[in-house]
Image 1 (cartoon, rainbow, N blue to C red):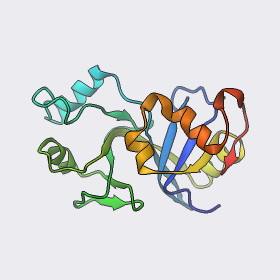
Image 2: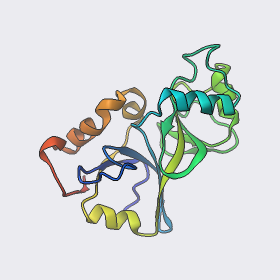
Image 3: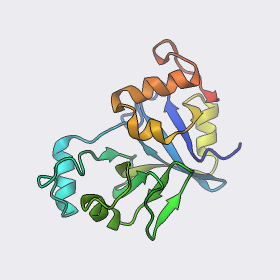
Image 4: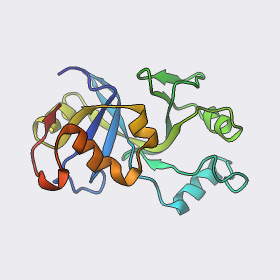
Length: 185
């Protein structure tokens, strides 16, 4: 299978495990050793956001629009932050994924965002989704995921509540009428 890096995974309706139900995952890395991605459509409750911001010493009450949302990125290492963002920002630890999207794990990015020196668009997630060697390929073959090319516009501008069904439409299906089979676009 070709690399799934810079693609979206769309969970199929039968995935009702709580971790991936109705999710869209952006694949940041995919190679023979495994895969890593971030859920892009599941914002954390505001109470959890406040606790995380306090732990990061980023008081959002000073400017509530600076860091307004934090997302569930996946079940692996849920206390670790990952920032998907536009490539107009780069520091040590920034990984360019595509021409539209970069990933930064250096905590300096949060201070830069708060100071107005960060990327134009970003998505802060806690945790990530990970798969071992060939695990994701088996799940796709099993019909657990649909796969489509990714876009920064979809990540940063599409409403979170619409992402799952809209991603399925981009694949060519109405998710409400589809059950149990997946594959590649």
